[in-house]
Amino acid sequence: MSTNDTKLGGRDLSGRRVLVPGGTGGVGEGAVRSYLAAGADVVVPTRTEQRAEEFRRVLGDAATDRLHLVVHDYTSFAGAEGLAAEMRRSLGGIDDVVAPIGGFWSGRRLTEIGESDWRTAFVELATAHAAVMRACVPHLSPSGAYCLIVGESATTPVPTAGLVSMEQSALLMMQRVLTAELGGDRRVFALVLGPVRTRFAADAGPGWITADEVGAVAVAASAGSLPGREIQLRDRAAAGRAIALLRDGTSRVEPVVTMSTMRPKPGRENELLDLLRELAPRIRAEPGCLRYSAHLTRDAGHPAVLILMEFESREAFEAHSARIAGQVSRIAALLETPPAPPALFGSDVATVSGV
Ligand SMILES: NC(=O)c1ccc[n+]([C@@H]2O[C@H](COP(=O)([O-])OP(=O)(O)OC[C@H]3O[C@@H](n4cnc5c(N)ncnc54)[C@H](OP(=O)(O)O)[C@@H]3O)[C@@H](O)[C@H]2O)c1
Image (cartoon, helix red, strand yellow):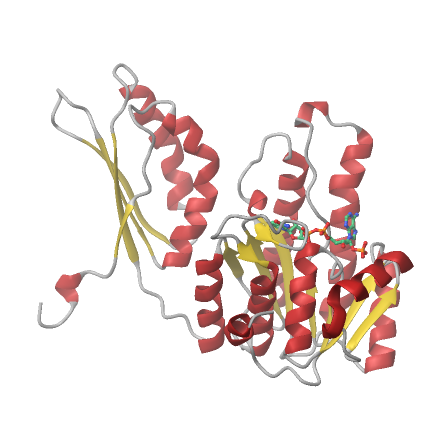
């Protein structure tokens, strides 16, 4: 973990008891390193002795005596209950949980999946998450945080990886329902990740968030007092913003206004307008959407559509971008040129004094 990453989320979590099921994985490694670096006691259950040994080697010097690597199957209700009980017995409680359980699955369209695909990619992973949540959330200390880790496929359909999208989307709803049911009693976060640079995917794009940065965001969530919420971590810049938000404890929310234009292919104008009409109610219902309007030019010779949107924060706009990504190919098919990212504008300058 770099010094910079430590600074990003770095808080003193000495004495905190943190459970990281799935901690042996690529994303989990970042969480384990970050909590150890912040001084916490970190319990990493793994289902096999071989994985335990391998992971200890991966961590090297970072595997201090505050790392509690235990061979324990936490993926069933009984297994997770047993683990939570043992952690309370041996360490006296559970303060925080980070759950990066399970990886990616792809290769078949939904109409081609078999029952074993369904069990592997949906039932087993969803069961493991539900089991850990059920065993731990009621016992979390009041200052602690539960960070559920999911991918953007939770909100964006990925053809031939639909089971992952369905499972991740169910987990995202689990976080939302928990937040509603707990009514502020416990803090449950969903960290929604774009592609992550891990030890298994070192050859990544420059903007990819790193596993250490995901860990730093989770540490910042634990160390702060911000209520649980969905946090989009699409790239490295988003990680920095999330940590600033979690660290300050308040959101320095500034609305963003966006503007984009689209020029339909000749003869496809009505199809484009129909598609925009279809999408409008969904976009207006998105969290943080303050305005969505589409305007057709009055210049009949060169039809063009102006899209104006306003979101209560940049994070809300980014969440919208992630949600709309699955529709981009439908829109692009009707345009003369591929849709460009919209121009972003800040606060209304007319309301700033002196202007
Ligand atoms: N890697 C990415 O680019 C990326 C991007 C977006 C989102 N995510 C999300 O991050 C989470 C972790 O992903 P990852 O890339 O770190 O995965 P990973 O490297 O495969 O690690 C996942 C860990 O989960 C545990 N696990 C428990 N039950 C499992 C099951 N039935 N199948 C597979 N693993 C199981 C395993 O730990 P033990 O065997 O030791 O118990 C494993 O080490 C997932 O929710 C994923 O959707 C990852």
